[in-house]
Length: 223
Image (tube, rainbow, N blue to C red; front, side):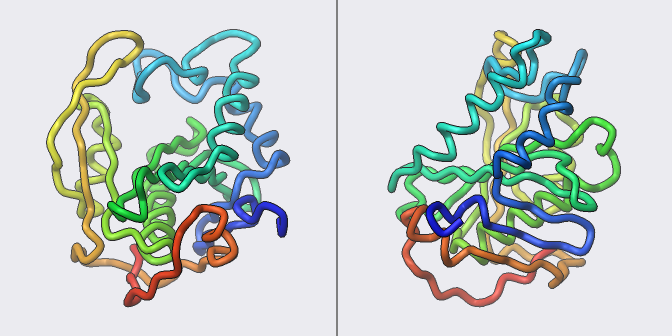
């Protein structure tokens, strides 16, 4: 990890952990991708994606999309692929993304969990961990995200966690136009029930690779 620190990054909670995507962890997720992360009638992701395809090359195309995204980090574009670990087993992905991060101090994320692990509150837990990494570890001033208007689960999670509506936009959903709800969460947004049970490991080592200058911020008490 000394050569390329992001795969050694960890965000640790009592219930789960986020770990920088190593090839071994991505390999653990291949059976989930092969079996299908989503299926009809649910189409929560935008644009053409290998996660929707039902063919023998789905997992290969998924890996081919991850590797260049995580490796081609530039000052104006940063991406981390974090694997969700439950009891040490890979269970999903949190994918924080920052565009012009040093200027805008805003990050967004893309995520999914294995189908059998949904509806248990784990989506909120993994998002809380990713938020703590962005806001406290990397110095973001706000977090942004979006979900299709008919993705009730994700929209509810954003609302419960204190995100505020931030307009709408159009995107493609299975090749058809569909409306997106945009959300934003400011660093100092208050919410009852925040917890202080998240540990960050390997963040400082990652900052030079991600072109992030050192920051000094007051502690952000995580959910």
